[in-house]
Image (tube, rainbow over all chains, first blue to last red; front, side):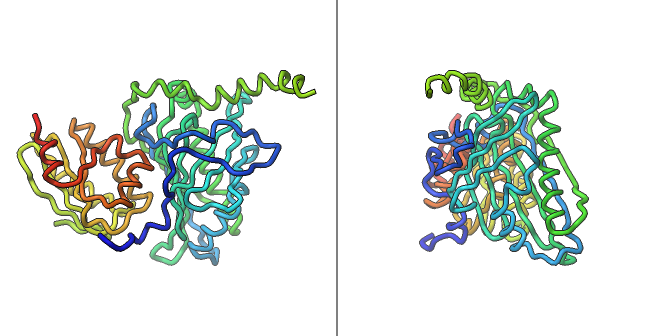
Amino acid sequence: MDSEPRDAAYWAKNVTTLKLGKVPAKAVNLNVTGRRVVGPVQGFGKMWQKTARVELRGADVTPDEVIRTWKAEFQRFWPERNWFYAPLTGIAPGEVALLNLNLPGRMKLSTGVLVLYADDESFTLMTPKGHMLAGWITFSALAADDGVTVVQIQALERTNDPLYELGYMLGGNRLNTRFWVQTAENLARHFGVEPKVESQVVCVDRRRQWRKAGNLSKNAAVRTFLWTLATPVRWLRGR
Amino acid sequence: MTEGSSLITEVRELSSRASVIDLKGDVTASSEKALADAYTRASGKFTRTIVLNFSGLEYMNSGGIGMLVTLLVRANRQRQRLVAYGLNDHYRQIFELTRLDEAIGIYDSEAEAFADADAP
């Protein structure tokens, strides 16, 4: 095949490890630069496919317009107290974003995502080593047969290591599903629609990949926790 | 031959232990049924390796990569290996980027894939 494939412009290119650009001073910037991305094949826990879908019935908006807004204002639609520091150049293939998330038990998590794929009607984020999840999540919009624009968030993921898997079993899985349902609700409300989100959770692979248990050494939540504990020391040294 | 969305699949038996699925067109999230049907036809009682031929691949998005992961899970459940050939440089790079190449063996030609597939 000599000509360039139609999808060539939509995929990230030549990414071996992540490199984060400038981020706000208030952000906790850990566990991103230098990390490799991981897909569901590299994760530890059971593999899940999660889908949150909402119709924008009554909203006069095309799929392209939804995705344009979503890319431009991604943070705005996230549940409160979680931060997505978008790349300065916006959500585009190959760009890297910093995440500061609140976990149960007042735990904080600093990690990131790579924009793996982005076209006019969808974009996909892929996680790095140390993130709670190994996999990718696709945000898309399409026109249904009756012309209504339908928005979908679909994740294919495993937890990255045994500690995260334990957290997932103890309620993290439910909270994660809720996170994406809330995101879909926030987006629908932005377009003036009272949301009725359909959520589907399917366990694609029940097996845990024990050979990946060593991923624990890069656990971003543990590293963020240790970094937080050391805050007074850093403060004293800085005086 | 099965047509699903804009993906056409054809199944060929290389030996009692290996089958090829020829993929022509677009691999996207809409390809789920076409891929699942092709896998069922390719998967005989003694099949140990499923070879995916991507020579006719014209387009693939992130939804398509997700379909390949679910196909991989299905094959692993049946104790089968999934291997691929016919990927151009662009799609090879996507396999490397998504790290699917760590689970799906990639070969330059059908002969190489078959030689490995049929090895005892």
